[in-house]
Length: 317
Image 1 (tube, rainbow, N blue to C red):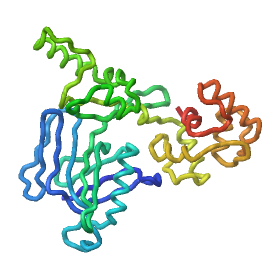
Image 2 (tube, rainbow, N blue to C red; image 1 turned 60 degrees about the horizontal axis):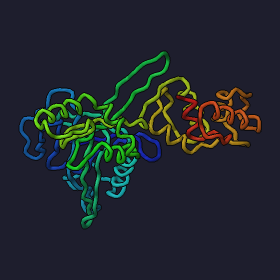
Image 3 (cartoon, rainbow, N blue to C red; image 1 turned 120 degrees about the vertical axis):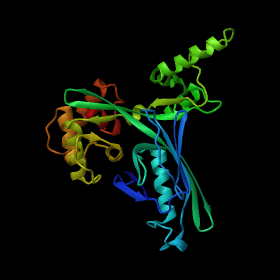
């Protein structure tokens, strides 16, 4: 059995890592149904049925230099390097793929939880993944996928707390409610029948419920403008991107490095000039910044005259 995890790293490059040491057990859960994979002495592997979003987790360690070459270790990598990769993936919300040979697990996930600590020469860690689900809505030559992460409600959780944790603002709790309205309403209706004299808010949630958090920041955009911008970014040397129509995390990371202002030259400048309707000569001039300001004003953006990340994002949306 081997465990492979693939995702975009901090440099914007797609990276596949092999877990150096396979954990003793891997926990899989989908709402109230659980399956445990005993790796060392495993018997028949069974997967829960249905389309429920699942959790995947395990505890393990990244071996230090002393175990390099050991039969226990699949593919040795500096534990600090692996630790940095996992932390980046967790903090950035990078979409990942986890493949575990010998099981039916080959899933698209996010890291929901990651902790680590040095113990001697090795690095002990715990990691938890949440399945990601994409719903595709097509319109002409543009496709958007609204991606959400699944979260299991813990004791003491409220929609406001989840909104603050995952959306950055407790006032956005109604977005979570709307995304899970059927599930939440059904449970509250049941609780009101059980407790007729008790006032239960429509926004009440319960321990062990699995809710989908609609993370708008992970919206995937696919169109011709994305492909054109990615080609320009690659030619200008901002990042070595795979040129296609998908606006992924690596592209967004590269876009955040860009600020097109007076005096800047290159292919991205040409792209911006095309979008604001000025001469596409690849050099940003005063008339270009004026056109950028006009564009920003029309799109409801902060008017700066600089084509930054938010302006570029609007241009490809």
